Image 1 (tube, rainbow, N blue to C red):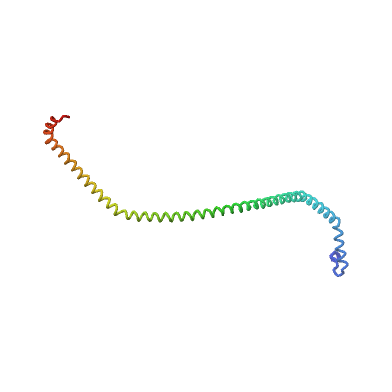
Image 2 (spheres, rainbow, N blue to C red):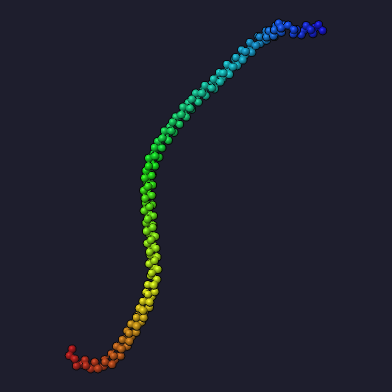
Length: 180
């Protein structure tokens, strides 16, 4: 039991606890220096690796950022030129649209006039219906006159034929006395 008491530190005195912490630290001090050197060396190696990655990446990022700025700047410049061009063309387009509106107004008035003329023609056609009836009657009358003239011609031919036979013989006798 005496051995167990000698192995346990006495907790009653504060200096004994202090000494024991220092003695533990002193035991691990050569090992801690080696670990710190190893950690420092690993950190430097890792930092060099990161420097090989980060610095070129930063350089590439700066180049890409400058190129992006150039693209945005040229896009803004192109948009400026395009807006000037669109503004100029819009002015011309608005003038042409005004001309088209005037022409459409003229076209509308011409269509109105044509509508009135067609309505007038429709009314004139309605007044022609009685005229068509009169023309039909006139056509029938012309057919009657043609038939009557045909009868007169037939009668005249018949009379000429009968007169020619009745007068033809005495006239041939009279023709013998004529000197000519």
